[in-house]
Image 1 (cartoon, rainbow, N blue to C red):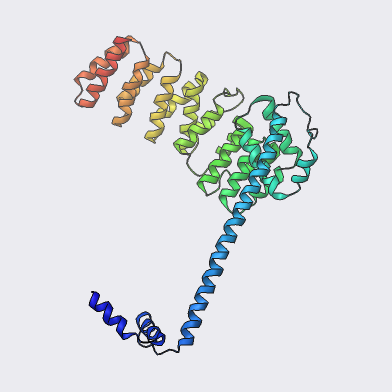
Image 2 (tube, rainbow, N blue to C red):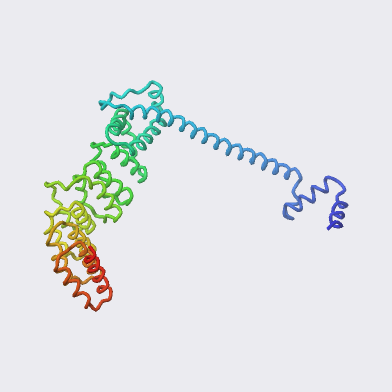
Length: 359
């Protein structure tokens, strides 16, 4: 290797020879014949382009850092002011919240209004009572709802969903008709956000979107709607029976879940009729609902349905739900199951009977 380097050094007698060697090494043979000036020009152009590229990247990065720093400073000032509004003990009338001159000057810029809206929504999520009410009044006083409404008019579903969320969080009842128009949207996420918002704004009255619902309600979404309504009993004037007649099986399933959760015994007969539904998911939900209702007839209804039920999973559900009964008929029913041909049925019957004996 040392001898090779020595021969290489000996071959180079001038700077021109070195340039020729480099040119033949870097460039192909058909380019090696190019003038030396062209190579110098190309190298210089590459260096200048690289410098401009690096300078551009540095400029964009520094500008982004500047915007982020500016947003953080703006958010900090707005957050301090919001804390003062939150700590206000009085129920402030609309348009009476004092806006300092510095904040008012800041809010003349669109960016600051966007930052304030985000801070309001973030703060409102963790507030209740008077403080939350003052946040809503401030939102309306500063006309921040115009930003949310503008988002709903967007063609991008995630921007629309954000606008819907802001309007419902800030209790904008005048936006109900706009939001309910999106409860049947083809986009799943936007549709769910609109349905959640309308129930948050209007409670049980918001469920009127069930009338024209073409898409199924997912299990997770049903639980979310139930959570929103769990603090409100089903109004007497509200006809929940119509949900149990819906052609949309997920609506029927939701109605049964709500009746069972609220323990609304006045709908007992309608729930029992759902045991004849053609969809096994609805029949299984009806069994769970009957078990939740405080009615002495539930045990008899479940055992009678067991005889005519064809789905094995539903029969197993009936056996499990008998754990909530202490009727003598259920003990004899479970004893008879020990002679069943299906080992799963026998095992489920033994477990339920053992549970009843312990309790």
